[in-house]
Structures are given as C-alpha cells and as structure tokens.
Length: 153
Image 1 (spheres, rainbow, N blue to C red):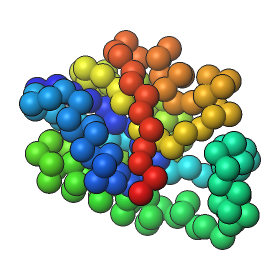
Image 2 (tube, rainbow, N blue to C red):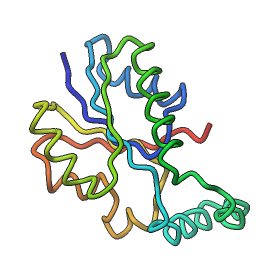
Image 3 (spheres, rainbow, N blue to C red):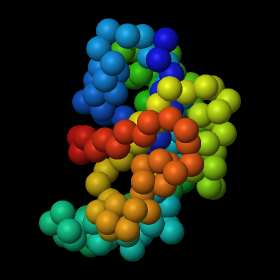
C-alpha cells in the first residue's frame, strides 16, 4: 500500500479526490490528511494572489468570510476524509493549528510515508519566494513532495 501525507487548506472537491486517488493508477493508497485552513496571518498574501489571478471580487469580500473558525475546519476535514474513503482509499487526518511543516515532518516519519502531496490553491507570492508548503517541505522531509493545484469548485 502506498502511503501519502496530503496537506490541504480547504475541503476536497470531487475533482480533487479523483486527482489524488488516481495518481498511482490501481495501487491502493492510504492518506494521512493534514489540514490547516488559511488564517488571518495570510490575508495579505491571499489578497496579492487574488489580484495576480484577476479575482478582484475576492479581494473586496475577503473580510466578509469567516472561514477561520474551528468548526468549519473540522467540517471540511471530515468532508474530505469521507470523500477519500468513498473513493476506496484509507484516510485519517487532523487539523494543524501551528507549525504545519514541523507536524508534516513528524507525520511522515511516524507513518513511514512514501510521499507528500501538497494540494492548495495557487499562492503565487509565496511560491515566487519559495515560502509555500511544498517548497519548504522539500527541505524538511526525506520523501518526494508533489505540488498540485486544488480545484476551484
């Protein structure tokens, strides 16, 4: 069985589930999902990314959203785990409050993961400066790190 640590920041869509569960063809996959919803500390970076992508409406309404609450994160994680299991994969997961990359390293070691998949929306500013999860994870874990873009749906 192929063991994957999956880092996400929002609930997986059907397209996301199909993407990550078919990466290894017919091989059975087990996921450990680490979810850290984007918080207040990332508002400026999200706004810059939205401007770069031409999503000016998102910049204007950024403060209207209250997605940082723990219940939304719990629901998003539970939704993602249900959908991964429904697709035939084994899946467990947890919300990560602080230091997601430190937690990633310990989870990779603990579960003897074969790879890390980072599935998030594009974060052009962070990626340009190599401050995104995937760029940083490549220097912290001893397994391959794959960067994929999450579906907008």
